[in-house]
Picture 1 (cartoon, rainbow, N blue to C red):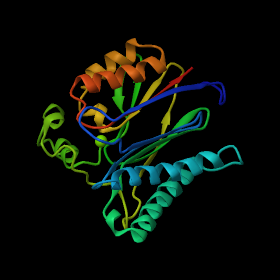
Picture 2: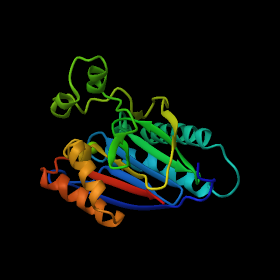
Picture 3: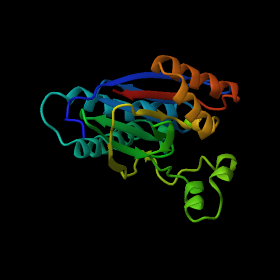
Length: 244
Ligand code: MG
């Protein structure tokens, strides 16, 4: 086990509207301690407002880090609750925003491990020793069907209902994130992405790309290119973090 504080994190981020959308409704936050992706949903500007509101809550947490000890799991849980409150407040001010929602996948780095808070179908993956593993679980109807053995993970990739969520952050809703810690080793590479990447680029291609393009700035751009080459049906956001 590495002594705490001996690991360093280097990250890169890319976000792109894709080929078929008019606006980018994904939002992203990155710092050397906190990484987060939110994918908004709702008509007109609502999706953009929703993901921005969730990331505003994350930004506030990011600004509090380093200003004293805080419990990572507690802080992330509070941040998700704060995000839902922001959505609720915004929808109360503007009824056009009622029903808007967003995913949120946030990873808080404490120097030796990540604590993850996750709601929805954005994803976090870990590449370790060349093998890619999804470390979040999609909150989707299709994931439930996979878990029940009713469809295969391959069939889930093209299932017509694959974007139907069972959990999201929504105005008037309540926060129900998965919160868990991830042990980290030197050499690990982490990816957080919206479904605009993971829906289009299959896991074996993600694994191959993350394993072969070593520079984090280059790999995030390459991932966006792959999603656009695959049709770019949705907004694409990816954050890559390398631990050394
Ligand atoms: Mg999306």
